[in-house]
Length: 273
Ligand code: PXL
Image (cartoon, rainbow, N blue to C red):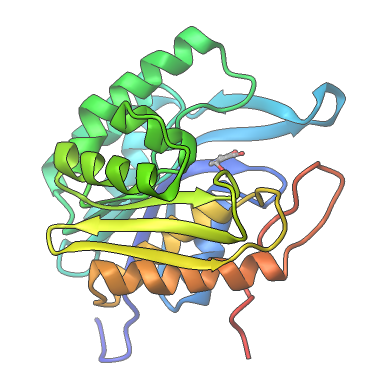
């Protein structure tokens, strides 16, 4: 039974990051904060190693178990109830193929891809395979993609050193994927503003906010993509979803949480009154 008050439903297919800053934890907190009913299908478990410079200890979830989680969720909520899926860290080509096959059947209206490419501590050969699989199997299915600076360079094949470069690369990623693109300059581009470039079939918009420090904050990318997914699920246009997600992340970075890792974590409650 549903009622007029039933919230929009959002599923994230993502990894756990044990300290709670990034990954599925950030996605779920973002969904809750923005008023959607959040669901997780877990792809892997990442535990930073304090004895090894906080590098990632990475354990994949068995592909059958990933498929089972998605089957349970899609069977419980039909496409009319659950039409928005966010993809976070996949971590291996086998996981990508499993997720891709599950999405092929369902074809969600909104598929927000956070193209998490390299994970610290992963073996480079394996990481390259994963990047290629992501580009071949998931990027073409995405309706919205949120690459950071590094991922923007990788997906576009272009070097990004300025806002003009970021614009050109975002246009290229839109061209090859057909998806709406929110390419994030973040703290990687010089200047006092954190600049992101949005491109879709209707055109381009530069989203800018004063930088809050010069250090990347854990969970910012995950929370941004999850916020885009939540806003799309509630009916926003891609551009409005991008604008609201940027505001959500900017406030969350202002109220970040510091622990012993060299990076702070975003607080999803930043927009609360
Ligand atoms: O921020 C990217 C990211 C996504 N998902 C998981 C992670 C990380 C980074 O640490 O651990 C599970």
